[in-house]
Image (tube, rainbow, N blue to C red; front, side, top):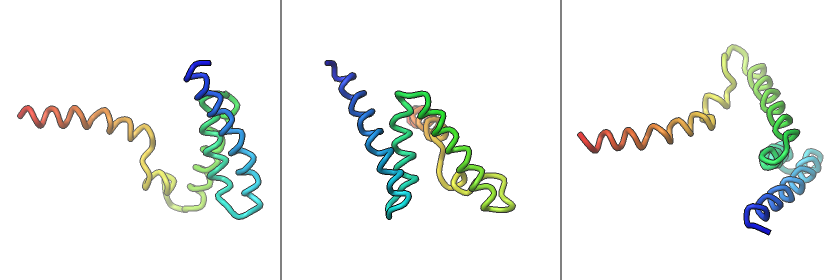
Length: 104
């Protein structure tokens, strides 16, 4: 068994452990929705159904954030927390900016 296969199996096991724990934490004290989203994010790399469900949860969260904050064009969390695309874009731009400033 290769290392990649072992990592894949461990990710799947971890995701399927966290998913029911998150559901249980919806009724008990604990970060239930956060655990469910984390489990789906882990499983989304391996299963299409998990990716689709995670995308649906993002849509619902965006809708709830917009409707809970009247008068805003974008959800509150999108203004305060950078998206992954923004982080990736910054990671691409920063090395070029540093290199161009050091050559001047």
